[in-house]
Image (tube, rainbow, N blue to C red; front, side, top):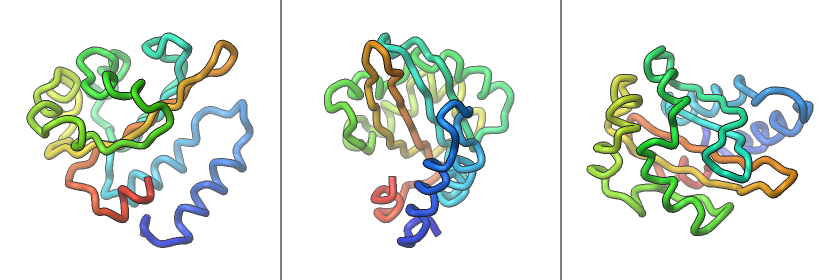
Length: 154
């Protein structure tokens, strides 16, 4: 289970054992998704202009329409407004936005809702890059509220 002490260490070990040039570790993310109740997990690398997506991987969504929409992820995504406030800090988006705000955004209405991701609870963080380094953003979206242990893990 995700909240057991050994799980996080195993996950980190798996991530660090991958070669740097390799694509994002889909099996590791699928495992995290599974441990978090089949949550949608998204990881993206981006250039300095945070909206210029360089590479992303999304697990927990198999719906073709929803996956196609992720290429337009910056449009109508409420949490992009708070990511820059505390770079590198994990946040649970329910602390920033009401469920109504999240669920009425174009991103959820057009892409996540058709994939069955309601009720929605979300969390994630942004780690900005620099002139020579890509930034990283990750987001976890659940089909049910996350437990304190799951939030602690993330």
